[in-house]
Length: 180
Image (cartoon, rainbow, N blue to C red; front, side):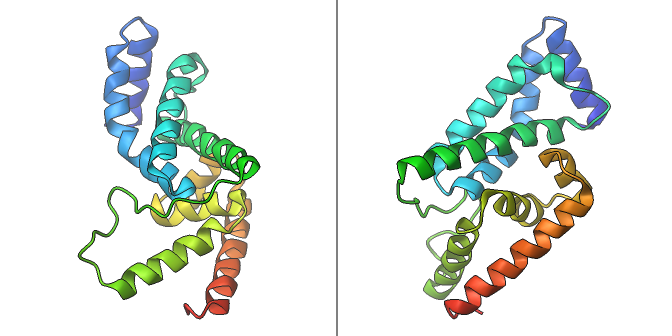
């Protein structure tokens, strides 16, 4: 599916065919879930965020501008929902669930690899949400600087700056705990 296909599905939905949205859900459900999971590190919260993002997208389809990529628009909704969930969690001060993402390592991995990944995920989890979002989108969702800027609604130079700062913060955190 291309940008034109996505825009056509949105238009079909706006013209009264809600089934057209099902193809968009099918295409973007797993990537959105994985981004939310990387942001939240809790599968239930990630499922909730993914579902809420699709619901908000469906309710706001008339706001979608087909000049832009649909995935940038829906990723932005999912990231904003993830940031809202993080703010809510911070207020509730719940402990972070240390679950692996859907496509992450399985139980057959070595303890050393699990410990290294856990240390990295803990370090990422310790970043402020703005920095965590750029790290997750760049390294876990494999998005370009331009795409990240579109998703987060910031300029490309701001993306680069946040990524640089986030990497420095991660380097400092990981070297402090002896993971580097």
